[in-house]
Length: 133
Image (tube, rainbow, N blue to C red; front, side, top):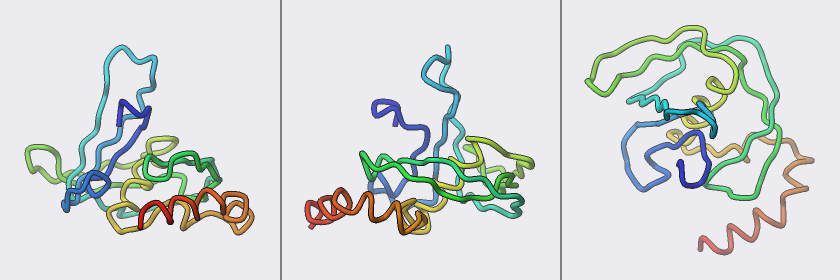
């Protein structure tokens, strides 16, 4: 994740069949990495709507606008197996958590983009599909 300048990673992206995501939105200039590790994450409430451009380590070179809830409440387990709730997650952290949870459900951000963005990225997506066969 860090080597590719990513801000999130889901276990299935690296071939692991566990419900685990790691997100770190501290940014490249941060003095210390601040990874958040969530086991069995689930969004238990969401409100608002925000549109922002997303990309994905699993779909390199493709960027498109995605509409997602603006503020979420997350329930998950921490590294010690303790269940917790985190309320009022917003901004890039909320977007990243939602994006990574989508991976756990087998959903990629390109499944959520507009028809226009699909058409604009069609050649790249078809090339990736051919290469993955």
